[in-house]
Image (tube, rainbow, N blue to C red; front, side, top):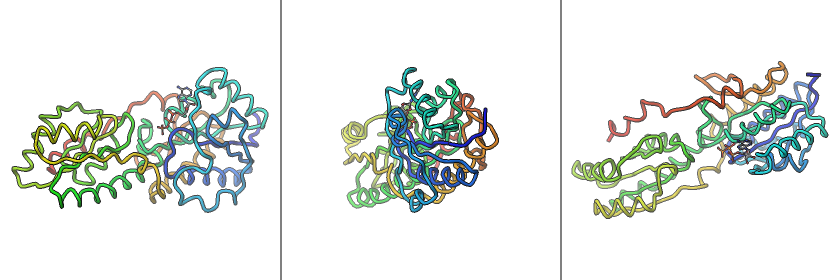
Length: 322
Ligand code: ATP
């Protein structure tokens, strides 16, 4: 590998609050390292269209506190195929890019891994509100999404309490229950339903709610991960079985927006610096991770092969605190 002169950065997959902070960090750390830094618009989709532009320090001012991604993000079917990846490599060569930093989730990292097999040096930075990148304790955006969800549920609880209702609240997370679990414990939910744990609606939810009513509870919050069912359907069934008036709320994209939390700004900033350090030290095809409170990096392939489980301590917490 010759001397690195130009690097590029892109954001891919679902947007996550803090992606901008990571872009800012990569651009500024990269320039400090002596590199020309290019921003790729619209993820792999834009890469395949040659949407690359050089960025300077001023281009990334005033974005640290903003949600979303200034580089935009997109999904690309073309890039998942070998011909697309070969084309992406050739475009990077045309621009003289020596290494690519990919900010995104697992899917984006699989794409990066495929590019690395074609000889493109890559570094991944985990950013997805779902927090399902197995090799990192935290992904950029998760903390903000949890806090946004909590703020919304605190409001819903006030109306649920006034009307003495049950509220079923569906939160994001794709096939993972990390957001639901943190939000559920944080808002004092009566039930938290996640795809990782099988449940029986009648026994584990309805009977639990009736037990709560017998204990003197007058309103109830059920937090449902999107991967574990539909809030609308569930609310209907709960009302039929328990005769407790029940409403459904799907929080949806509201959880993806908003200014990143202090935690997300911090890890995004440190991860961007670490990604540039990896390149400067000639350590390629790595994923930057936050593990046990430290920013580190591990082999991309190894990172992709890892599995992540819900923290066991949180699984029993909802029942204990009922
Ligand atoms: P999020 O978790 O926020 O959705 P993600 O990075 O997992 O983020 P995906 O939509 O899965 O989001 O992936 C983003 C892009 O990465 C896809 O549009 C596709 O171009 C590329 N990609 C995904 N999976 C693969 C794969 N197996 N091989 C090559 N490229 C892939």
